[in-house]
Each structure stands twice: as structure tokens, then as C-alpha cells.
Length: 113
Length: 115
Image (cartoon, rainbow over all chains, first blue to last red; front, side, top):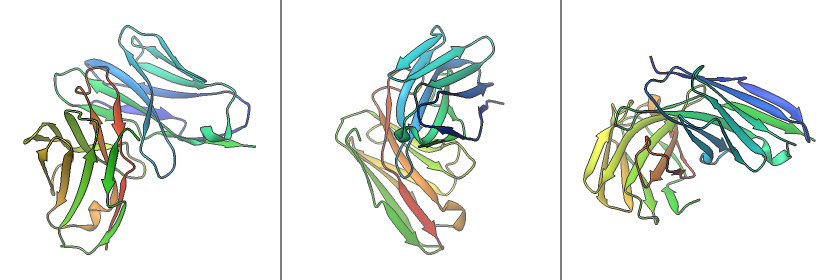
């Protein structure tokens, strides 16, 4: 069964600290993996998109990694800011020629001053 | 927000009434999607469209219908709303299908409450 599991469910960190969010998936065949940021009351916004052959992708203070062998991805946030408080969603697309994408339930990040 | 407008943003309706949500885009993207987001669940695809008058079902399509008569508009209709359809609904657009590596853009969401 195609699944995307994210951990932790929620996380509280102090402003300026780094953190890493995890995404494990059982999707097959794999097409690509995306990380989204979703602020409260708003739609998700794309952070990174990675294909099978990419190990790392950065977007400012956000760095995503992908290990296609172990089917794991992580999102590392450097020098966190209060504005990083949001849900972070991992999404995996299935390479079956259709429109199947599996969304994780997200990690809720709280950055405290 | 990438030229996507969802309307209404909030709606409360009674069980058994029909409801239509609208998604309007100004990006001329071919693909449009309707998702629902519920606590503890990832976003789930309801229906999608790959062109004018071309639509197909997603994983949670029961009780929903869609129409796309123009490139810029994608309507989601709940024929007879039920309490289980209380949710936040998101519209998304993309130039290419999800298995490509192009970005998808989401609207602000519509919070629907069925009482």
C-alpha cells in the first residue's frame, strides 16, 4: 500500500535553532518527492521538488535530502525564524502515468522566541 | 498566491443542500485539482481536470461532482451535503501532471461546515 509517514507529528524549537523533519514512504514506483510549507489558514506552498536521481535540494534555509534506496527524505531548517512556524507536508508522486500523489499528514512546527 | 482564487472562503450549509465551490485561475494552467484536508489526514484528491471538459475522479470522489467549461474555472459541487463533507477544500493548478517535476500551486482554501 502506498503510504507517506511523517515524523514527528509536532515539534517546538527556539528561534535560531536548527531542526530536521522526517518523511518515510512506501510509494512505488516513485516519480518525485515534494516538500510544502503550509501556514495556518493558507494553502500549501512548494519548497522543493526532487526526482529519483537527486540527493539534495536547497531553497534558502530549507534543505531537503532524499535517499531513494531507503525511501526516506528529510527537511532541514537552518537558523529557524518565527515565520517558520507552519505545517510541513511531504508529498510523493507515483509513476504510473496518472495523477496519483500521496500526501503525508504533515509535521506541525512551532518556533518560539 | 499564483493567481488562484477560491470562493467562497467560508460557508456553512445544512445537510442535504447542494453546494458549489469555485476555483478561478489566471495562470492558464492546463491541470486543476480539488483536494480536501481533514485533521490527521494528508490532503486527498477529490477530482481533477486535464483540460476543458476533461475531468476524472480522485481517491475520494463519492458525493462530489466537478465541471470545467473554461480553462480558468473549475467547479466542485456537493449534490447533497453531508456532515462528513465538513472539511477544508483546496484547489490547485499545475502546468503538467504530478509525475512531472513542475510546481503545483494551491489556493487559499474554502472552509465548509455542514450542519
